[in-house]
Amino acid sequence: MGKNFNVNSRTVTAPIVAFTMAGLLFVFTRTSIQAAKRNAQSHRDADGGQIDWRNESLRRHGALERPKDQQPIQQLVSSPKYGVEKVVEKDEKRLGEQEILLSRKIKGKGMEK
Image (tube, rainbow, N blue to C red):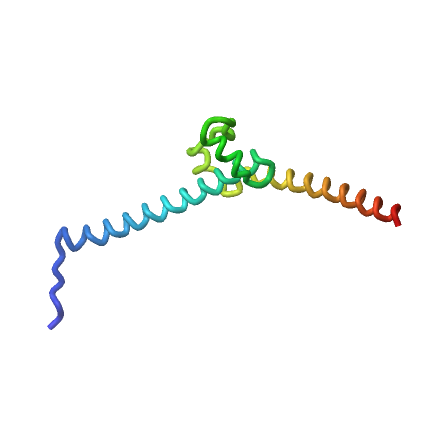
């Protein structure tokens, strides 16, 4: 004879609740990680490309102005590449300036010899 499965409200709701909790935990962790990455990026942008811990400390104690206020709802709706274009443009500009300085340095050394 086959097994008689006991189906009642407890046996049905327990798995539903478990999957719901797992889904909520997954969404919460993903959005928290994305928000932390965006927050760190805005602080790096405010410090010129790399986090300056002294400036960060001054910001937290109110001595320096904080980066622009983030819009959490817009961040949830927007794509993960939020603000990447601006960072790429800054990096290209910085690399161009470094190349100019390096070429001047090389020309200066060539003239000394």
